[in-house]
Amino acid sequence: MVRRAGMKQVWHTYSGNDWLVLVGVWLLVGIWTFAVPVHRRFIFALDSTISYPLLDSTVPTWLLAVLACVLPIVLALIAYLYFRTHVAAKYELNLFLTGLLLALGLATLFTTIIKRAVGRPRPNFAAYCHYENNACNGVSLAVMNDAYASFPSGHSSFAFSGLGFTAMYLMMCLPSWRRAVQYLPRRSGEHITEIALSEERHSKEAWVFVLAISPLFLAGFIAMTRITDYWHNTDDVVFGSMLGIAFAMFVAHFKLSASVFAPPPLVPVAALTPAMSPSMSPMDSPRFPEAELSRNEKSTSESREIISIVVN
Image 1 (cartoon, rainbow, N blue to C red):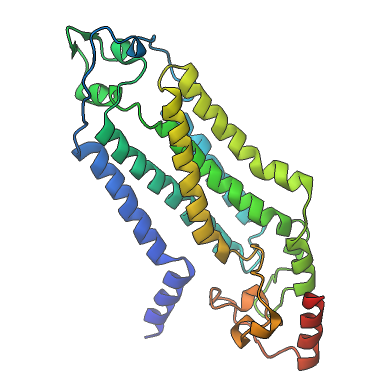
Image 2 (cartoon, rainbow, N blue to C red; image 1 turned 45 degrees about the vertical axis):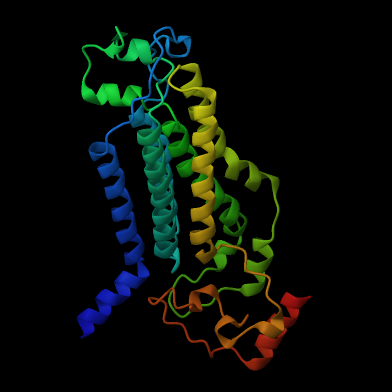
């Protein structure tokens, strides 16, 4: 029984259900990529829009994966190692990883579904698959399918979903990191100083904004190279970018509201329940079963003082 309870606690702490969903999403991506045939749109023999030269990608697929997925994960791991003594470190790392992979997975899945259904030729289609006599010549089936995968841009949707989610996490959480992180409990049994954390959550500093949106500049650069390299039309890139941003926003709204560093909701003090009492720190939440904190350590007078400060 003790072992079963321990496994249940680990499953809850590390969001086991979220990881199951992630596995399912990426399995669907694989199935749709390799099992679903590509629609091949009719092509006019003298169509100049598919006659652009074949150029090497400025950002190849492997580099895209590094910039939009591996790099944010590495930075998150570095942040975890720096703050590993804090109770919330493992929770925040797991929150970021599941959110990032979910945004990337959903954007990739929907992009793949649309690509297979639309089957739009790339701008470099003729040179890419050696199109002559109304047929591709001397290329593999994989190359032929990829030649019909112009809409929407997969690079753009992948870049903006991964780096967009990273930007939104930084935008939401960086204001709390600068000073409030020193108030996070370093051991079970310690409390966050609510006043300092509340003040820091509402800080509006220019460097936070600039640093937070910096991943979007990288995503924009990746998307623009798909046009200049003649792998996509402008509308392919615009739609792919919008798709990536949309999934990044949806996942961020769904996942990041649970972050320790997220701004608290604006709730009237009279509406606060005992489970939401301002005298509690975010570490007192059931999200942190490893932090066995006592919720009755503070006196009623201290609680009233905190409530009055928050209200004022």
